[in-house]
Structures are given as C-alpha cells and as structure tokens.
Length: 90
Image (tube, rainbow, N blue to C red):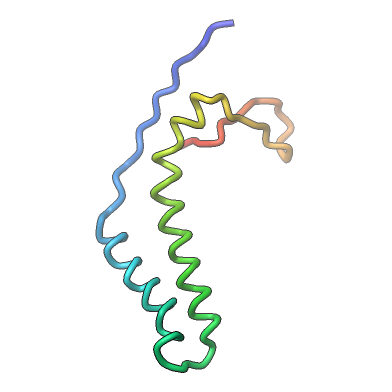
C-alpha cells in the first residue's frame, strides 16, 4: 500500500477579526461585574461563546497538520461509502 503525502494550506485570517471580537467578548464578560445589567448571564454567555469561536478558528488550522500526521481520521456514518476522511480538511 502506498503512502500519499497530504499538503494542507490555510488561508490567513484577518487580524481585524481578532482585534474586534476580543474586546467585545471582554466587555460582555466584565460588564455584569461592573454595573448591574438585565440578563447579565446571557451577556456573559455570549462573551464566552465569542472567545470559544476565536480560539476555534485560530487553533484548528494551526493544529490540523498535526492531527493528519498522527493519523486521526474517521468515517461519516451517515454516508453509504466506507471512505476515510481526515479530522481536518479544507
């Protein structure tokens, strides 16, 4: 069985995304601690969701080649074919 080399390239993420979402997430998280606001838990939840989104879009492309080298792959059980697919694909 021959080994095929997989070359992955990622597109660069805009820095304005990082520079605009992190202060917004911090504001949503810290605002209920500074002044009482209605639905404070909802705002904090949105702030943490933004932080999770930012970390996901930056970490998945950075760690993807490592996952492929480690051989992490799986099968889509909803499709009828038995083709393996990698955890990280572009």
